[in-house]
Image (cartoon, rainbow, N blue to C red; front, side, top):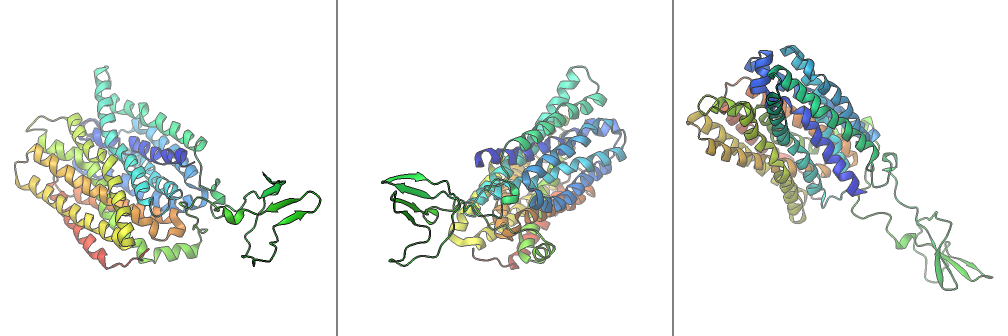
Length: 476
C-alpha cells in the first residue's frame, strides 16, 4: 500500500513544476522579446504566480482533510492543465499575468504530497519520508529548466520561429503529462492505511478469531471481535465458548494481535471551526510556518530569478544565452534530490536524542547558515567582477543548506498539531509561498544581476530564524 502511494505523492508534485516553473527558463530571452516585456513586468509575473499558489495552499489544506490527498492531488493537476494549455494564447503582459496566476494553482500540489506521506509514517521516520518525497518533487523545478530550454532549442532547430517555439513547448510537455499523472493518481494508490479516507479515524479492530477443533485451528466465520478487560485466572472469558458435543473451543485472538501496523498514526480528528481556530492561535503553527517563509519562500524566489541573475552577469561578458543560463539555474532545483531528504534524515536523527526541541534548533540553525551564505553570495556579486566558478560554488552551498532546512522543517511539522495534518500542511505550505512573494518583491525592486536582492534576503532569513528561538516546543 505504501509502495503504491508514495510514488504517486511525489510524482504529482514533480510534474506540477513542468508547468508552474516553465516560464522561468524561457523568460530571459524568448518570452521577454516576444511579448516586449520590461524587467519589472517579468518580476510582476513571478509575484502573481506565487500569489495564486499562496491562496490555493491555504484552501487545499482543509480540502485534503475533507476529501483526502489522492483526490485533491488529481483535481489540482487537471485544473492546472487547463491554463497550461492556454499559455500559447498569451500576447501581452496582462495576458501573461492571468495565465501565470492560474498556472500557479499547481503549486498547491505540495499540500496533498506531504499530507499523503505523513498519513503512512510514524513520527520516528516521518521526517525523512516527507523530506524524500518533497525533495524528489521539488527537483522537478530543476528538471523543468533543462527540459523547457532544450525543447525550445529543438523546436527552433526544427524550423519554428521563436514566437511559435515557446508556445508549442507548453502544449508538448506540461499538458499531456499533467493529465496522465492525474488519471494514474486516481486509479493507483490508497488514500490511507485504513483504506478509504473516510475510514481514517477508525481503528483496525476487525480480526478473525481462531477456533480449535480436535487440536486443529481454523478461522471462524465470526470475525467481529471486541476488546475485553483482563480476566481473573479462574474466570472463564466471555469470548471462550465450549461445544460439549464437538469439543470445539472458540478463542478470541484480538488481544494477541496488534490492531494495525505500529508505525502508522491514528490520531486524526475531524476538522471543525474550533479546531481550525485552535491551530491558527497555536504558536506551534507559526514556528515551522515562519521558518518555511525563510527557507521555501527563498527557494521559490531564487528559482524564479536565477536565470536572470546569470543572464545579467554573463550575457554580455561571456556571451551566455538563455539556454546556458537555464542549465546553470537548474542546478539549484536539482540539488533537492539529496539535500532536502538529508535535512529530513538529520531531523529524525536529532529527534532520537533530543526530541522535538532538537528538530526545532536544527531548523533554525540551518536558517541562520542559509542566510549567511545568501549574504556572502549577494555581496560577492555586488562587489567583485564575479567569477563564474565562485558564483556557482556559493549558489550550491546556499542551495544545499536552504533545502536541508526545508526537509528539516517538515520533519518538525508532524509534531505541531498532528490531529489536523492536512490543515497544518496547508498553512505551512501557504506561508512558504507568502515568503516566495516577499522575496520576489525584493528582487522586483532591485536592479539586475540582483546581488543586493540576495544579501537583503539573507539578512531577513537570519533575523527571522533567531527570533523564532523564543517559541517553545514539547519534548515529544
